[in-house]
Amino acid sequence: MIDIDFKALALLTLRDPRAAAQQIIGFNFPRDVLWTGLALVALANTVIIVLLLAMSPPNIALPSYFDAPLAMFVLLAGTSVVYIHAIYWTGVAIGGKGSLLDVVALVVWLLVLRVAAQLAVVILTLAAPMLALLLSLVVSVWGFWIMLNFISEALHLPTLFHAFAVLVIGAIGLVLGLGFLLTLIGLSAQGVFAHV
Image 1 (cartoon, helix red, strand yellow):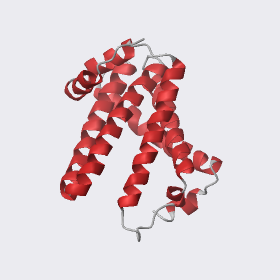
Image 2 (cartoon, one colour):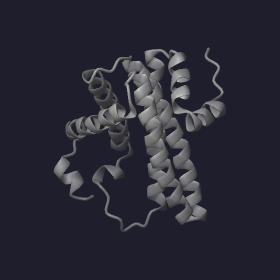
Image 3 (tube, one colour):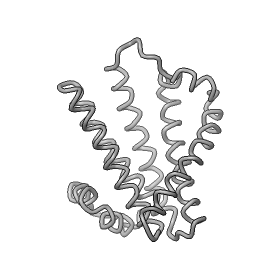
C-alpha cells in the first residue's frame, strides 16, 4: 500500500508543481485505481455543484442537465476522460513522450485539489461572497499554472509554451468530444447552450 502524505503533497504542488508531478508519477498507481479515482472526483464535483445550486437564487436560468445529478455526473466524468485523452494524444503528436496513465494520475490529483478549493469557496460564500469570488479566481489562475507544469512534466515537453499549446488544442478536442458526449446522455447541444 502506498503511503501518501496528502498535506505535504498538496503544499509541494502549490510550491513546486514539477517536483510534485515527479512524486505522483513515481507512485505508479494501477490503472483501475486511477480511473476509479477520476470517477470519485467527478462524483464529489457533482455534489458540490448540487450544493452551489441549492444556494443560488431560484430565478437563474441553467442548462437542463443541472436538474439531473446523474446526467451531470456523466457529463463531468466524460468530459474529464475526453480531455485527458485529448491532452495526451496532442502531446504525443507534437513530440511529447510519456504514459497516458501519468497524465491521468496528475489530472486526478489536480482535480482532488480543485474539489478541496471548491469546498472552501462554498463555505466562504456563506460568510463573505466577495472573498469567495476572489478565492475562486486565484484557484483558477493557480490551477492553470499547475496544470501547465504537470503536462510539461508528464509528457516531457521542452517548454511551458508546448504545454500551453497542448492544453489549447486539447480544449478544442474537448469541445468536439463534448458535443458527442451530450448526444450520448440524451441532450442536444443546441438545447443545452440555448440556456447558458
